[in-house]
Image (tube, rainbow, N blue to C red; front, top):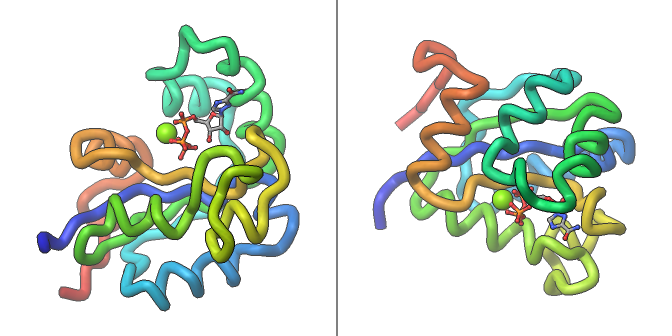
Length: 142
Ligand code: RTP
Ligand code: MG
């Protein structure tokens, strides 16, 4: 299995709920190393740009409003099969449908406030990592 990188965001609900450490522990326990991280409060422009793929969707306005409602933690995870593994740890998009033991089942309440984001494919992972981090900010430890 190939070593991959993926972009993860701890969303405003999970930062407000003091779940950063819990979520980081799940990543590291699963063999995903945190090779870059930053806390920031997304601007309207940043949130709209990051989620541009969803611009035409009916939930776009609510998504941008929620993602700009408070600080987030943005991180790059590296490890074998990182993109799929991260999404497995996250659980289904809707917390009500997420499997027991996943982040969204354990720590999230609603479809909007669903605790985490994770890239969904290699190309989107590359784009999303470059959206937040330069190559010199990725501290891969091999
Ligand atoms: P994410 O991008 O945040 O990792 O989540 P995802 O791939 O599981 O879900 P995606 O389809 O990419 O949707 C992005 C975020 O938009 C919100 N959403 N709301 N009201 C709705 O029907 C709806 N569908 C999606 C969720 O917060 C989702 O995480
Ligand atoms: Mg998505």
